Length: 152
Image (cartoon, rainbow, N blue to C red; front, side, top):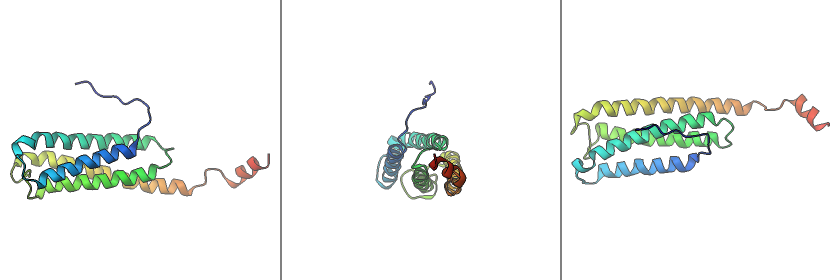
C-alpha cells in the first residue's frame, strides 16, 4: 500500500480532533454494548491503530505550525483526546467489556504498545505546552525596536 503524503496545506486541527474523539467514543460504546465480538474485533483493532497513527500525524503537524494562533488550545484538545484514547485502551486492558485482554490475551502486546505510544505523546504535548507558555511570555519586539518603529 502506498504511503499517504500530506502536502504543506491547511490542516483543520479542531475538526480532525473532533472526528477522532467521535471514533474513540464509538469504540467505548462498542465495549459497553452486547455486540458480536468476532464481528467487530478486527475492525476495532484497526480503528485503534488508525487513531494512534492519526494522533502521531496531528502532533507532528502541530509541532511544525509554530505560528498557528490557537496552537496552545489545539495542544490542550489533543491532550484531552489522548486521555480519552488511553481510557479506552485501559478498558480493553482491564475492563469487563466484550473485547478485553482477559478474553483475548493475544491483544496484550498491541494494547501495551498503543498505551506506551499515547503516554509518550501526552508527555511531549505537556512539554510543548510549557514551551509555548514560555515563548508567549517573551516579547516579540523589544522596547527599543518598538520605539524605533513607532517614531518613524
